[in-house]
Picture 1 (cartoon, rainbow over the protein chains, first blue to last red):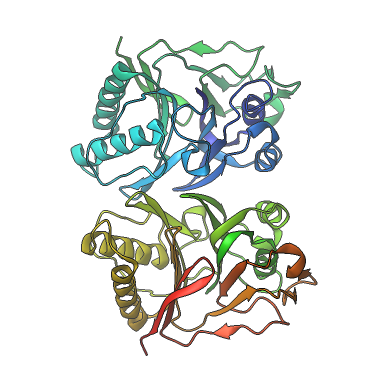
Picture 2: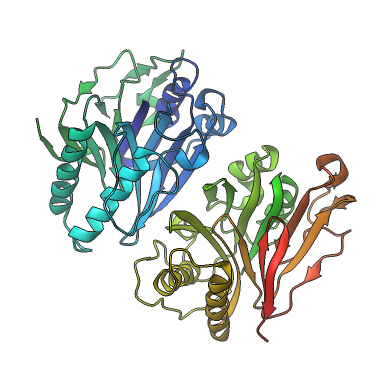
Length: 258
Length: 258
């Protein structure tokens, strides 16, 4: 399996603290050593880093831990390969352009026998995850108008996610830079940090932070992850079938398809 | 304007030496300080780095100079903005997926009033370069079968490049990872390094290298750039209208449309 990390914030925020915790699980405190990737939106642009090396020992991951890249929406993934070899093409998150925006997707789970329906988006690698992403992109492009509202979009995303969940495990994060869609098939948790900000300590490394010193009173920053990343904060668990649409650090739409 | 750098090699080769020279021109020995980007193919995957910061002082560029990323095909660009603001979305090279491969494009020149024809690929930023790339991708997708041969493909690419060249300056590098297409509208040069390998010295930095110590006798590595990068090797200049298709360090097809 793999692990997912997403961030939604109302002000450009770096991911160094959470990224440091997650990447330890890529070969050090966890078995997810088969590559990692992260995408940071910056305006309509997206800055991606992918590496098939274990994140715990990756030189590029080290740079990202130390070099703050500020973003309002970010998606990160560390991989434990099941379907598909360990190589760059199979490293999440995956990116495609739709309607003049970059869409970014990362998946935790497994749908061994999944095959996408016909459409213009095709996988480059051979993971079930990229196959699923291309199916999502094809269905969205074929069934929605270019100016579709978030409501129409989430209806389709949830319908698709529900159908995938019937066929296997499908925890996912998807974004176009304006919003961050999260769907829980088996496990996902989130925490929203806002004033008054306190300290936090990573579960996977002897690293603490005092958010009060890093933020302004108006900041709202939510972190979504397959497993909580800190051991001294109270994370809220998603239930199987829960989905949430995040924007600027807040949930703007949510539901459950138990 | 901007500067382009491409590499085609028959064995995975790092770009550290050439990249170190080119990036000096991004705010130090040259005015191309409005961002930079590089794409390294690794199998069917592609590793991209984009930064709107000047390449001469970019922390990420520094990592790439020091951390050898080996690839058979790479495309690099440093930007001096003309059309489009300085931001991440406007930073080359641009990437789109077509027929299950990532296509990467970088452009030097200007076609101020260019507008792409209708098609599924749309620009995310607002540069003439990305508009051109989307037009190329739309035309290729619409006019060729999925299994088109390089000959059919280059016929279309050259036809498109010729038409763009009539409307402005269009030096470009384009690749899908299997081949590297280069087109010269005003300026481009290349050098092919093969045994016996000698030393080389960068024009833009007090940096020398002895390729004999870095290579094996069978290596063939070609570097294509808008301006030569070394001052002690003899680069071959493209003439306006020259195009070359590179594969594994060798020219496999070429022509001229004077």
